[in-house]
Each structure stands twice: as C-alpha cells, then as structure tokens.
Amino acid sequence: MTGSRRGPGQHRAVLAETVAPLPPEGRPEPGPIALLPRPKQEFVDAVEAGGGVVEDLSENTRGLLWLSYSNPEQLREVLQENPQIGWVQLPLAGVDAYADVLRANARPGLLWTSAKGAYAEPVAEHALVLALALLRMIPKRVRATSWSTVPEGRSLYGLNVVIIGAGGIALELLRLLAPFDTHVTIVRRSAEPVADAVRTVQSDALADVLPDADVVIVAAALVEGTTRLLGKREFALMKPSAYLVNIARGGLVDTDALVDALASGEIAGAGVDVTDPEPLPDGHPLWSEPNCIVTPHAADTPEMTAPLLAERIRLNVEAFLGDGRFIGVVDPESGY
Image (cartoon, rainbow, N blue to C red):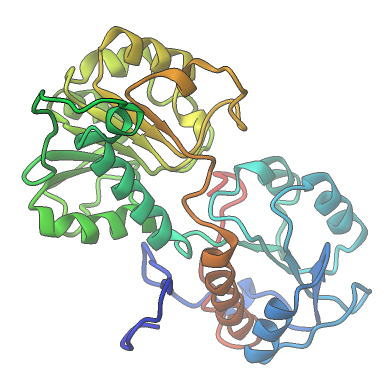
C-alpha cells in the first residue's frame, strides 16, 4: 500500500527495524506449507501469491501458518509430532500467549515469526482516540444528562507524552502525534535513540520520566520482567492531571493499583483496551470509574487485521522460498 492512495480502512505494516536476510545456515528448508487449525482462503491466496504451495499437514510439511489466536497446547502437539517443520508463522503481534510453546521448541532449525508491526497503524490510531477522548473529558460528557457550565478539557498540543515501547505501534504513534507538536519520550529496553522522539531512555529510567508526563501510553510487549510494569509506585510518581492509555497487554499494568489511583485522583483518568483479568468481569470497578474508558480489546478488528496478516504471510513465504528476509522474527527465549 505504500506509495499509493489508500482505500477506506486500509493500513500498512510498520516495521521497527530494517529486515536483514538470515544467513544460509539459519534458513529453514523450503517446502509445502500447512495452514492450521483451519485454513482460510484469503491466507491460502497469500501463500500462493508468495510462491508457496499449500498442502495438508504431512511428513512433507516444512512451513506452518498457525491461524489460531489461542490453542497453544494444540500447537505444541503439532510441533512435537512434526519435527520436520522449520518455520512457524503466528497471527499475533504479541506472542505472550505462546511463550511456553516457544521456549519448549527453541531448537536449532525452527524459526518463529509473528505479526509484530503488522497491526501497528490501527492500534496506534486507537491509542490516539483514547488519549484525545480523555483529554476532552469524553467519559464525563457521554454520561451527562444535563448541560454543563463548567469549562473543562485539555488540548493535546504541546503536551509531554511518554510511550513505553519502541516497536511498530510506538513508531506509528510518533507519526500520528507529530501534528500536535507533542514532546515524546520513548522508554525502551535499549539505549538506542528512536528517530523523531525528543528523547529515548532505558526501562530503568521510567521513574525519572513519569513525573513530567501528561499522557503515558503503554505499547510494550508482555515478557518476563515487564509484568505490572506500572503499579502503585509508578502512579504515585505521575501528576494528578496525567492520563494512562494501555493498548498493549493488560498484564503490564497492576489493575488494583490503577483502580486505586483513579478512585483517589492520583491520576486524572485512563483508557484501556486491554485488562488484567481479560475479559474484564461485569461489575469490576473500572466499568464504573467515571474517568476511565474501557474498550474490549478492539483496537484492531478482524476486518482491519486480515489484509495485514495476509501481506505478512506473503512476504514471509517469499523469504521462506528465497533470500530469508523474514519479517517479525521472534526470539523464543525473550518471547518477542
């Protein structure tokens, strides 16, 4: 889609890094590709568009497109019974649901790829929607039953935004935030600067940047070491006028601490597309918190993601059969 006019609802993948070809010794053996648990025609078409051959699972299978967003145990069984498979494509951007399967199958000769970066545009768009809605007091407005005479609401222009994570979602957020002249700080695992961010800091400096943040957007992977990255201590560091947006994984935020921070006014509000637990149970305090927006993990819908996943499949099939320029390669040990 790059370089051409987009149609309604069309998105493009956002890559966080330059794709280099795998060395010849690290490339999986090409061959027939199976689509499980159930093949879908649009993804069959994507494989064939990449030059691949789709066949039922057999001893000849060399590539596997796992098209379920769950069923890790079923995938584990398939891999145990088919050690000849050399490449697995997952449909998820964050693969924490498959972390145990990845680690259990971290063997030489098995390459994992995910959809990371593929869904960045619709998810970043949703993050911007939540941020703007919070700043403009939309949670309060949609609940109102009478005309308010109190002037409330803030502009996004010129605010300090902290983005936790430096993947495709963060890169797309930087592009979307640019017209608002925001001052963006990226918090990431490495110290390598992110282009277009005012500053980039490592994860251990999160506490140093939270006190100045007007909006904190969580866009990181849920891996070992990032569980409950934001909790009681972090909310205490934020300004009472600051807002939290989480469009990554619910487990990155301590839900009980978030409820307390909202109820006490420690932060001004929150917009969460992901929760812990998920689905968020009926009657949970977040549903009734007046300064909180909860959306049901809907930042990207199947209508949005299907063409993006199909394009990721096509490109990775080309890599599978060609020079090894796989996109979205996953490290089984780190889980990302």
